[in-house]
Length: 328
Image 1 (tube, rainbow, N blue to C red):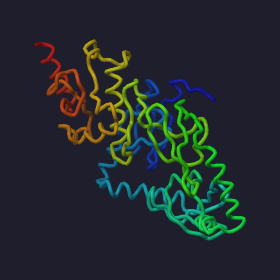
Image 2 (tube, one colour; image 1 turned 135 degrees about the vertical axis):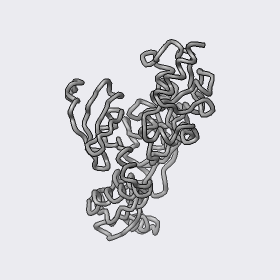
Image 3 (spheres, rainbow, N blue to C red; image 1 turned 90 degrees about the horizontal axis):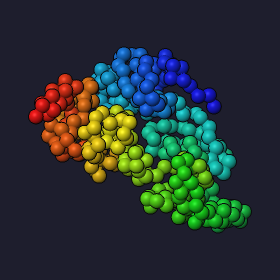
Image 4 (cartoon, rainbow, N blue to C red; image 1 turned 90 degrees about the vertical axis):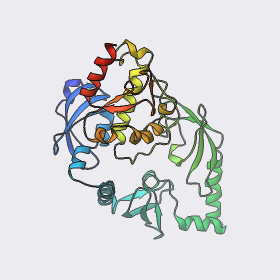
């Protein structure tokens, strides 16, 4: 695989999932890349992986268009509907189906080519093939001849995986706990955190794409939790949270020696709770649309990042507060 030099990224163009184009204007590290959006000329810091997969949003442009969150979500649904309408997919049993209608990530209407069966499912299940034709399921449950034998064979194969141990892409072990009656999903449990979730058969293997959201992957401190990715400012909040943890626990990112004692509260070690608490902070609305600093010093004790100790300050306000604090 080709490895790009930093200079080779400068000037490269990418398109996000909303169809908006952006250009890389600065590249410092893979987690510190500045892009400029074509339409608004707004610049935004993000990670290279987020830029490549199109998840970086131009919130300034969204705000300038005066779209509500509902309107923005509807635009995304319409874009996905145009993308998937008429596409053909194959499930894990080799049955073909067509997407008839996309009304949201949990409301996708599909039709099986052979049986003509129409049913509603989620976007993740129709894309990874973890959906069974209802007609086949009814035939299985009726106990008729060859179909019953086919079901029993498939069930035996699936049940044989219960107790097996696999690893995900990060090398974390998980075991299979249970199989659903329709054989379309497996209940798994991660060995270290005991986190359980239902997943599709395609993830019952080594190097699986399934994630343990309770594993403390960020500097050995932070973990995602059951986070709501549909929040409009998700990416911006994620970058803020990761930067906060790095300043406290990564010696290469500490702005000064005082950060050797700085900590992140247990609640904010989980991005799920950090995201939930952000709207409670003074200055939150300004942070949505302009550069702001997350400050723990003005109302806090300068040692702990937490919902009770933090507010948002403008860069100028933060500098003035530092002058006063350092001259005491």
